[in-house]
Structures are given as C-alpha cells and as structure tokens.
Length: 125
Image 1: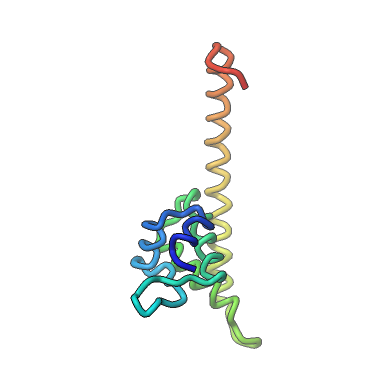
Image 2: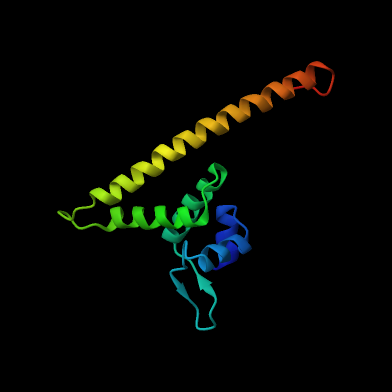
C-alpha cells in the first residue's frame, strides 16, 4: 500500500507516518524503484499500535522500544529466552494502565464540567 492509503486506514496523517520512519519507530516494508514507501498489512498493524499509544502520552522513542519488543516476542523461536523482553512489555502494560486511569479521571472531570454547564442552560445532552 502507498502511504496515502495507509494514512486513510490508520487515521494517521501522512506527515506522522513519515515521522515514524525518520524517528526509527517503523519503516515501510519496501519501497518502489522511485523511492516511494510501500506498506504491508503487518505495517498497518504496527502503525495502529503506535497510534493507540499516542493518547496515553508515550513518546516516539517509547513506541519504538515497544514495537521492537513485541516483534521479538512475535518472532522468537521456541526455547529462546525472551524473559527480559516479556518484562519490558509487562512494564509498558503497567505504565499504560496507570496512564489510562489518569485519562479516565480527567474524562470524569470533563463530564462534571459539561454537566455543570448544561445545567446552567449551556446546551442539551
């Protein structure tokens, strides 16, 4: 897929997808002879993972670490010790849970504000 189709499918801007390539987060699977980026279905899945990290405030560097770790887990041969990588992913899970709770609390405050404003005639729900 060309970058425009990937942008449409992921909800990411073309600029963001290019930034991910430049920042070493995710490279396209291949390029055309003319140098245009070509993405696979798997690339789209990786981009969606990175996109899902954005609302939680993870940096591009953190996204790159997580993508690399998950790739290692996905491709590890049986019997290969991936305990350190599993630990890294578990750390991301814990961090994401904390960040999610923080966002949930913020959304609760937004809901309170909206309810308060609506009660004063600022719009109907």
